[in-house]
Length: 207
Image 1 (tube, rainbow, N blue to C red):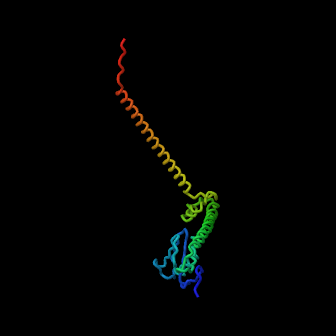
Image 2: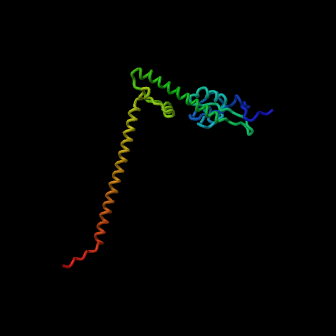
Image 3: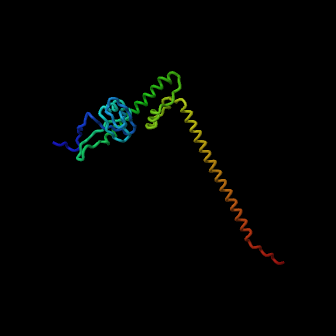
């Protein structure tokens, strides 16, 4: 008896392989003991690209890289074969990523406050992974009284550089305008000179 189209099925190779998906983060993991793939025992899940991996590798990645939003793709049997439910996987991955971003950011804030601010030490530079979360979620460390060492100065330098560039642009625009006005004045003067040459002398009136 066949399976109804659209039904969730257990593939024949269940326990041997699974399909993983990540909506945002690139996930890469070396899994000792897993069958060798095209990159050896390095398994990579590129963003928005479902990838089939050995079951042992998938289990390890789901367990140890959930913080990157990687999820298992549900497989459905349809008339044409096995269909990956990527719409559901994407929704699950986005929700998991948001949840993990919140957890990781809040843990980072707690660690900085405990290990640095409470010890009267300056906060270190923000790790790259936390910077990515801040950019992704619009978090603001200043709300927590955290001003990472060197970053405030860098931000000020960027503002100064932007202001200097803006002033330079205005100066160049002003110089261009002054040059155009001078050229216009010269043109007007030349035209007046030509008009004066072309004027016929007025005959003197006889007395």
